[in-house]
Length: 213
Image 1 (cartoon, rainbow, N blue to C red):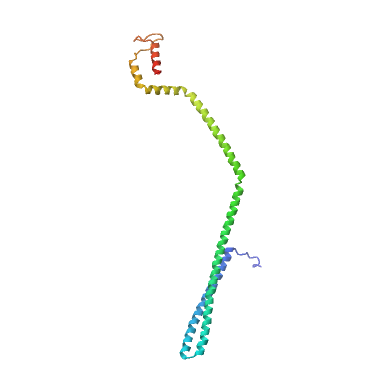
Image 2: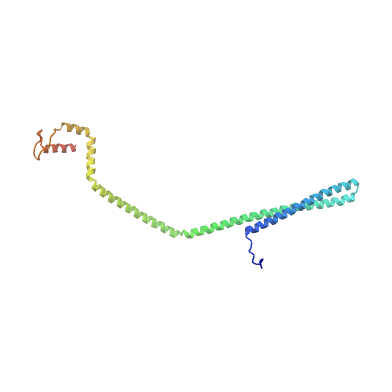
């Protein structure tokens, strides 16, 4: 009953078992060849001995045995080569099975990826992304324009003063000369003249003329 319910060996286990069988057969053949080689040397000595004794009949019989022994040894080498070829073929088949398994796994993985990455769904996602990206760009542009308008409105006076100061700086020497030649005065009450005899309105006119330069 135990043998009936025993699990079928896996491919790896079967290959290891086959390798053990093939190696055992190779060792058996090597031992046989060793015995044949010893018997071959023994026959050669006996043939030489019979030839020295002039026993042609015994030498002929021993020679026939030697030929048969050498043929058997050749067959043993041929069988060993075939067993080795079977082992190599088994290794190649195992390698091909591994590659086939790898290809099957890869194919299954690609199939799963293709199912997960539905082209229609992917295109829809890309369109939605582009749509939302466009909205975001428009919103950002509107916000920037609004901020620019606010900053422009709040900074009009400062910007105008900066422009005037820049112009005055560019013609600073010319302004300085005019300012030096301009009469000094101390502002008094509205409509009154200073100690130098120049009225406030005249000073204001001179300052306005300087800014127009």
